[in-house]
Image 1 (cartoon, rainbow, N blue to C red):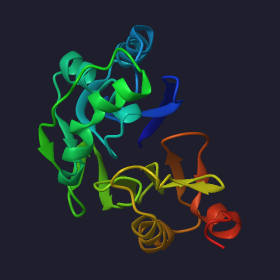
Image 2: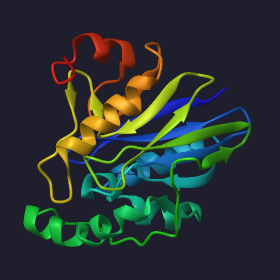
Image 3: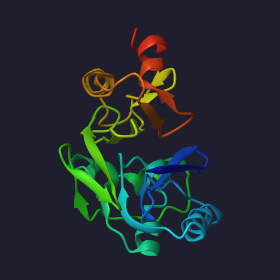
Image 4: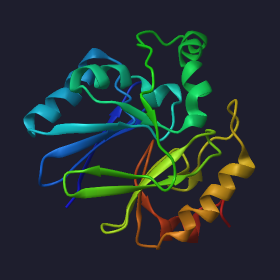
Length: 212
């Protein structure tokens, strides 16, 4: 069984996810820890639960989702995996931090690329990958069909959708990703987003104003 714990990090209130199962093998998704105390909080959680981190996964690489990626790579000796279309987004993070006046970002380099059809394995568990561009050009989501959940990044939120006014964002692509990927999942699938509270596919299908 996969356990899911999340932290809300940085002034941008980004959700960082840790997933692990009975083997104690774990993955970290979108480490947004910026301040030193946030990095220590994440590291302490891993240590306290005696977890072994196997993968660092990125749904996408907007600045708030990679604040702590260099730290995680160094601390746990893991590779950073993302979609190839995120390369220009990641390369622009340092500049974006300067424009937004956000100090403390440590630049990070990707180590490999993943895409829809690939499967992430840790312990006895697997995550399937969905390619869901729109909010970002190489946005991915990570799905487990046994426990019926999706780590969705900034695609679909409770009562809202991801922003599409950023460079390299696309409203058309975002809506196609939601309708053709997220909404093909069952109503009982839980969506764990990159910001704010979790929701379900069914709730958003019924009440999300952007989908009706």
